[in-house]
Image 1 (tube, rainbow, N blue to C red):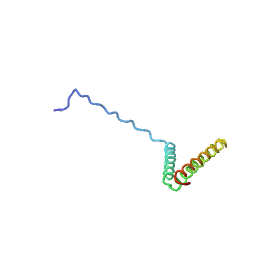
Image 2: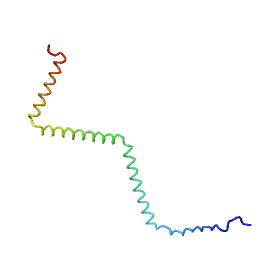
Image 3: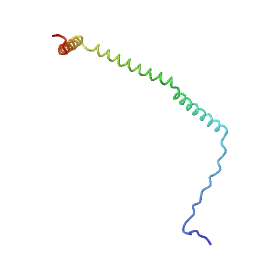
Image 4: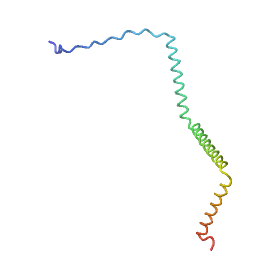
Length: 107
């Protein structure tokens, strides 16, 4: 006696066809690619673990950034006319004197 429902159809599983054995040249090419990928991975990991080199690189980038900002500041100062610089300096001195007098500098 069978307990199977005759309305259910069984799916047939296709058997994979046997693969042809790979050619020795294909295997060697795969090995070469794998070695190259492994070498790249090892280099990337080594670079990440080299804290001294990473710190030196970060320091170099910060130094360049500071030098660029300083050069920009010097260019801005060269672009400002001398008369405007003198007026700004005079205003700063005047404000300083007013503050000094307000704090009891001259009685």
